Amino acid sequence: MSTLFSNQKFPLLVASMSDRTPDDAICTIRNAMLDGADGFMIHLEKMAPEYVNHNDLRRVFRYTCDKPIYTMNYRSKDSEKSDEQLIDEQIMAVKAGANMIDMMGDMFDRSPLELSFNPEAIEKQKQVIAKVHELGGEVLMSSHTWVYMNTEEVLAHAKELESRGADFVKIAMSVNSEEEMIDSMKTTWVVSQALNVPFLHIGMGVHGKLHRAIGPLLGSCFALCVQTYTPAGHKEKVLLRAEKSVLDNIDYRLNRK
Image 1 (tube, rainbow, N blue to C red):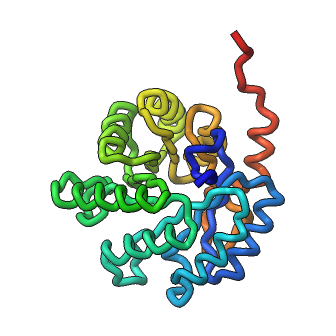
Image 2: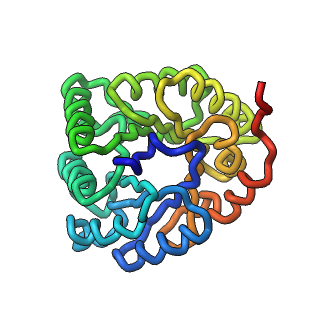
C-alpha cells in the first residue's frame, strides 16, 4: 500500500473521528481534508454496531483518497465484546481498506498500564501483527497508562511494545502539573530517538494540552486532532486547523549542514 503511514513524511496531522454513522464519518473526512489533514483515525467502538461491517467501512475508507487511515477498537463499558471480537473487527477493517490498526499492549490479557507480560497473550499479539502485515497493513501498539511516567519508564514501556513487532508505538500518559508537562517534552524527544519505529506520545488531561500541540515538533510522529468538537469526541485534542497553524508557523527545521 502506497498509503501506508510509514511511507508518509512526519509529523502528520491526523484527524481523530468518533462518528456514529458512515455518513457522519464521511462528512468529517471531507471537512478535515479541507482543514489540512494528512491522515485519519476512526474509533470503531464509537460507531453504531450495525455499521461496523465490511461494506460500510469500505465506503468510509474510500473517501480518504490518497491519505492513510487507521482504526481503534477499544474496550467499552457499553459493549460486552471480547478482545478476540475487537481484533476480528480490526482485521475486517484492514480487509475493507484501513492502512493500520491500533492494538493495545494488553490485548488478550487486560493488565495494569495496558501492558501484558503474559506469554500466551504476547504470542497472540504477534500473530495479529503477522496477519495484518500479510494483508498489507501496519500495526500501532499502544498503551494508555492513566498515570504519569518519567522518561526511563516510558522508554522501557515503549521498547517492550516495539519488541513485539509493532510498526508504530504509542504511549498516552497522564500529565498532572506544569512540571510533569515540561518533563514529558524531554521524554518525547529521548524516546523518539531511541526507538527504531515512529513514536506517538500523548499527554492526557488539561496539563497535557500544550504537549499535544507541540509534541510533533519534538519527535512525536502524529498530531492527533479533531476536525471539530462534538459531544462524542475528545475535548482536549487539538483542533485540526489550529494545529496546522502551529506546525505551519513555527520555524523549527534545521539548516543544511
